[in-house]
Image 1 (cartoon, one colour):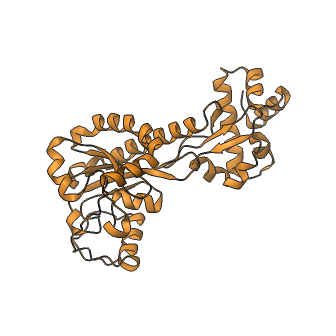
Image 2 (cartoon, one colour):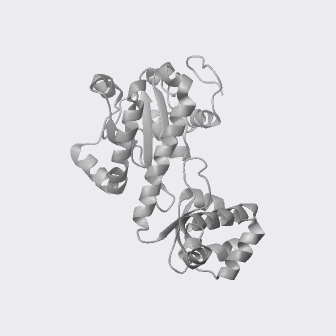
Image 3 (cartoon, helix red, strand yellow):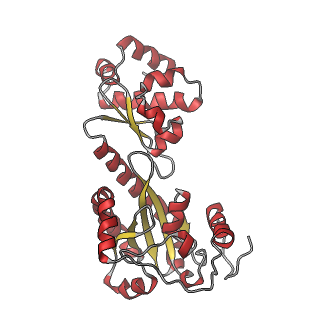
Length: 306
């Protein structure tokens, strides 16, 4: 789409184009206008931090681990809430002056409708991972800023916040951008998984397969084999809604009657995970899944599992 500003190098992603369209048509933002961030007061920040206490408690150790990994790339780590308000950061002291000037600080609101296309605000808006390189932010004042952002989902599949890596010298990390973004996604999924396990403490957590995108495909089941919860990834895979999960569907029973390919694949992954947890013991696996051994053998034969 036409946009005032410097010529971009490489291919602009669909997510960035959609965000630019929103900035131009929906928000009526002038990219050349300097941005003055809205920053919460101390009392307001304490209030929103308390509201995101579970996210903060789970994410802070992961943020410190991630900062140690990327510090050599001159990247900082930021954590924001679902309203795109920065809650916490890990930065080098040398970055403090620029962080102050660009409002990369606790309490600053990076909502896309105000700041324009940016890692935190756009990741919240589109619920997907995004990388913004040189000149890909909407406002010119951020033209040298590189931003990697990944949404983090809570135990009921909603956006709990965003974890963000940012650098003031955009081109410096462009060559390793896919690697940095993948590392950030893994951090986001670890935070999501811990939030999910804490929410469903005492229940069995099963994986429906390898994670694709920002969310791991995990479900929580009770002793009767009934589903009590599912991550965003699992909901997208199975099509389950909040109302469906409230009825506590039987996981294997649901999978057995569906003819969608995704359900058959999910069933196979559940059985594989359960067998691994039971160290290959079929009797123990059947007990854990709440089905008879004969049923489990039949399903294993049908799926080609040995």
